[in-house]
Length: 294
Image 1 (cartoon, helix red, strand yellow):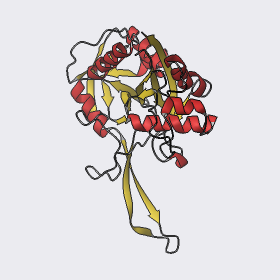
Image 2 (cartoon, helix red, strand yellow):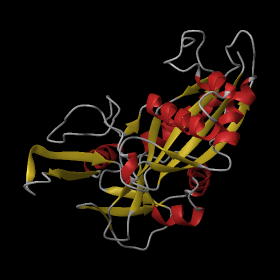
Image 3 (cartoon, helix red, strand yellow):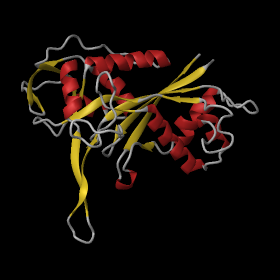
Image 4 (cartoon, one colour):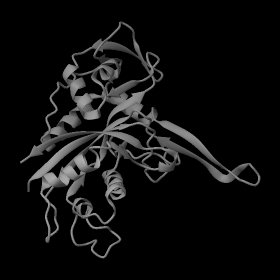
């Protein structure tokens, strides 16, 4: 079956909390992570739900295209008639913003993340042509430009090595929407193990309390710790569209994908993901990279 595919970049403009649903290591509300690597992510079901919510808000819940793209409403009598024609993958981490004494922050990634991005691109028929970095020592980082000084990330000090990253910067800029000159100045590539540590401990964990309105003291049992992905985090998500599965009517795969990439996100390239919507969390700037695959 012919599919049309796209990679969408998600550049967080506010903190993002996509909750995992259980406490971990003293954090009452941790974020979603991949089981094997512990890298932060947002599950595809959450991304798909956010896309559907935006579509229903923009076009109306009974719009026919929404039924073709996402499937019938799960609360309706026709919920089991057919599935939706849009496949939405997990939002995967690409660039993690990390505190640095050398500048306001750095965008950090690692060879394993970049290699997986290229594999995803090949699967979707979207070319992502750049050279993967060679083996990196755990005490070093790769930069597009060096100034002779060591680099500090969180509490760690690294020696720096200049690398040819022009093609990589152009690709990541196109995927994320970040300006090339900004990425050139702030992109840092670290060893995979160092990235694992940073992705685990460089996220934000904030304490929250609830106050009793009458006594003006902390309500009993109302202290909790919540983890979020910081603003400036960059994730990406794979979309694949197929011909609609409704037996009576049909939309081709390109029309299904265009419903998302053009009609929904074209004029308003923003998507709100995760929880805490009413306190402004989860706003992402969306960049669309699309290529047709036969």
